[in-house]
Length: 259
Image (cartoon, rainbow, N blue to C red; front, side, top):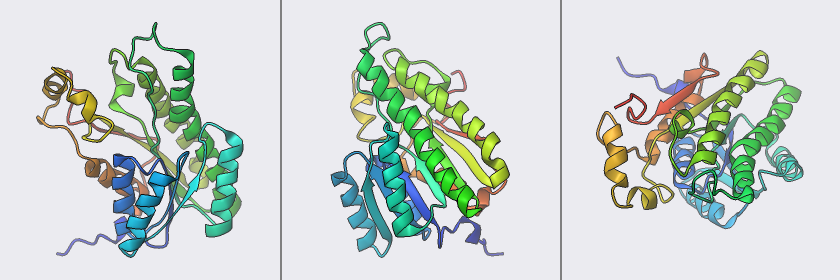
């Protein structure tokens, strides 16, 4: 019997991906475009987004980019007005933007760094999601929201206290969103990646002793790749996960098993 993969299709869907220029976001864009979605990218800086847009369009997909400061409600509303004018709707949201400007103990962390982490990782997730939900409720259609938390939100890592705290909050925010918005057929889930090879993580992992320390925590003896995250996002975005909401999927190679 041949596998019927149509429930994983995103044909006719519009996907808003926040922070799509990073390695994880880029991988999600690629998989969503392959599945047939129209891609909208947004972040504070548009130059890197345009490179991803050009790649998608060159490969026969459909993509565009809009700038938005995720920590400012007026800019998020402006971005959503542009999306509504040009595309009419949004079916899928991936909140994948992230920030962690300082890696220092909490008692040395500066207030501006704490505010940056919370504004991008937590407040931005809420601001984007609430504006999309207003549109979905107005149009009386369901949708899928995917928040990017982290395995760091379920453990502690010295010098990453603010980041860990923000990601723990995103995981619980996901449950609150799913509880409130399920009656509108809006599903909200999260992905909690462990260490994924990327331009953001690799410089840290390449520090003396760090790679072996974190690798030893995994059950399968390797770190993840951006496409591992993208494939889980594809499941959560598609009709294949139509009965999944309020869930955080751990994608950490077993790093939280207590090894």
